[in-house]
Image (cartoon, rainbow, N blue to C red; front, side, top):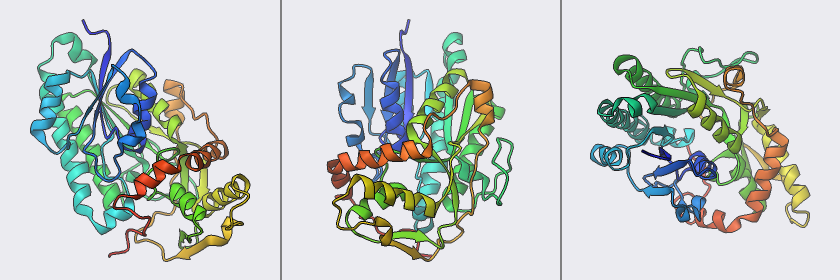
Length: 355
């Protein structure tokens, strides 16, 4: 009889995935199988030291490779899948949508089929325990006006190749549940931030550019609004959903921290002014540069997270201010990690303009 719950985590070398792996490995009650193709945003340096855990295993596998994915299920006999592997950057999806279609849609289909075939063969007890947890984004819902919030029942209205590919993957997961009975859970989260985030995303991009005195590019007037969620709060929510969520249900996960992009950038600058008082680029806000908006830029996202709070007892622990301070301090203390990431193909150039 197995003493540990075996969880297969796809995308476990990415930003959110690596945070989830690090969090779950605090418990000896789980065995983690980290499945990642190690594309540009997958970085095993984000998991330094975890391979010393006896309950951790890494597999470099592309989720679009059906034979390799089927082998994983045969070899590890997982009790649950937490599916985070995805192409996840809107601007990259504008420049090259094909990779998003392949990974986010075809990859999810491939994983679902392997999970279904495996699940069907299980004896009754492990069959009843098995769960497929699909981790998605609030961007599938489209753009909000000045008021209102995304609910689990909100209609899907994706506006970018990225969000359309994630919406398609969500629909596949629902279909595999309703058609085949595969026991699934779905979560849609707001914008994550925190340590180990790849520097194409807004907050780490602003931190690293400011430290080098480079322009801080802000789209349009910086008025687009996002709900910000500290990554460690997110992975705690994911864990609660896996443990206590109702099969077939969707749970929206938000940070209750609506901020305009300009507010975010100015707050980063103010923290750097405080934490790096000898910087020659103070005040760092003087580096803000307004650039042409990206195509189809959604105006506002905001999540109503009352369902996960009421049903599962989860709510974020970090305010935006406390989480952002931790994030800026982390990047200041981990310049070696940043340098190694930047040695790759991404050099903080602007993406999403080749339309």
